Image (cartoon, rainbow, N blue to C red; front, top):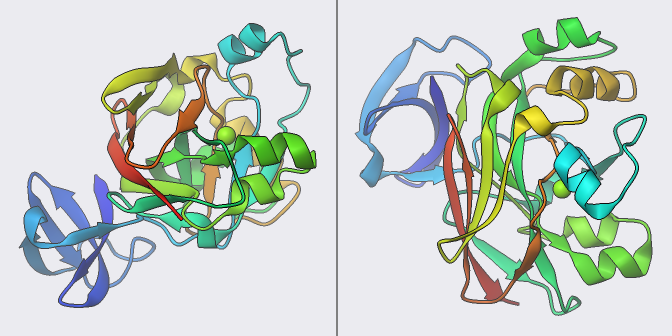
Length: 252
Ligand code: MG
């Protein structure tokens, strides 16, 4: 099932996408999914970022091929950091390059949306707390990341977390193709089977540090091939079994 958040007639709502039709839900993703108010053609609505997280938890180095390519040792535990909810934008929205940075990079990542309150779960229990999967772009001011040591500034500008276009709920995430296309040229390509830390391990690890809430977003690291974007570029994250997330880049 594809879960969408969307805007229609100046209000925001949630629905289920099937074919080109969005069936509006009476409530939200976290309640009864089968109660439908009315339907819209997908062309007649604007899709929004599919989740409203209280926090975005990101994994640093998580692709074996990327770690080997960089010559980095394989980490013992996931390296995690936070991005603020204010960095989220939806499909088709604009990534704004801040005046403060000279180099802003794309990072194609599989996003995991949390279903309910999760605290202190084992890896085996973790998958029962996942609502579904989406495409994400962990946009990063690479120069500021190097300058600061700490990553907060580099990862947190408004518009630095494109997410969407929907949440796919019926998907085995263990071996999916994850790609980035810059102006239709392929820049990143790997599979989630290359993860150093599988998703259930990552969710369990995070849940032993902080409580995860419904709608929280975990982004699972990026493959090799990261690179800069310039104003006017189109960046696309494509994930097998999920879909395609496109955004345009503009200057501040
Ligand atoms: Mg990243």
